[in-house]
Amino acid sequence: MIRRHAPFATVHHLPNGADHLHAAPVPCADRDAAVSDLLFVGNFAYPPSQDAARWLLTAIFPAVTASRPSTTLTFTGSGPPTWLVEAARVDPRVRVTGPVPDLTGWLDAAQVVVCPLRIGGGVKVKVLEALSRGRAVVTTSVGVQGLGELPAGAVLVRDDASSIAQSCLSLLASAEIRRSQQECAQDAVRLLPTWDQAADALARVWDSWAGVTRRPDLAVTP
Image (cartoon, rainbow, N blue to C red; front, side):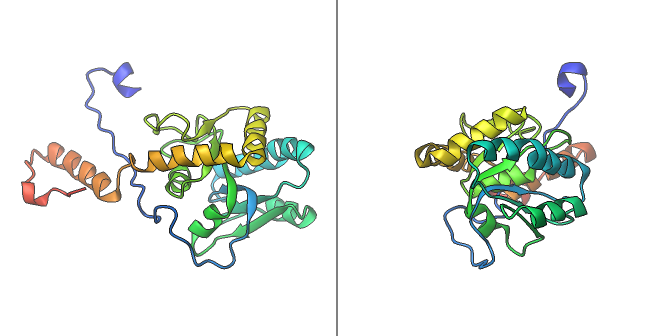
């Protein structure tokens, strides 16, 4: 977008790495991880994650449970607000874990990872983490910002509550559909940069600004 609106500007793209979680299907030893139909991961002290959690809880989840009453929903991450904790106390289908020592077990135990962000910027690491575990993901246009080169079908992108709910229902209803999307997610993982590659891209930007030519032996090998 910067290049389009400021064609003479020098613009660099710095990716996020995606190899800080083990690639699926390495098992996780977190025995507290519980099976959940829908999982949303976030720092719930962060306003965009709070907004997404409230939208998921009050608009998307009721639309899902209207057709599938037994559906369970888990919120995993730090800083859950009081209203979210209270919602879990009132509805046994909703679980709020707070921070967990190992996220991989919770991702692996989820049928569908939901990321209904409506505001916020930058690449969403939570989407990269879900892809790195080969999960079926439903998110929004905000959720896939910076991930435009993902293979087709790696994530389902929906921007209204009804469409997000319907996509979740379709995935929950069919193991075959989930498996197909999980395979696309695993294909996407193989195309995502590692943190070594991300660090190398950043180093090259600093070098270019400093007028330094990088020595070949200092380059990070993917």
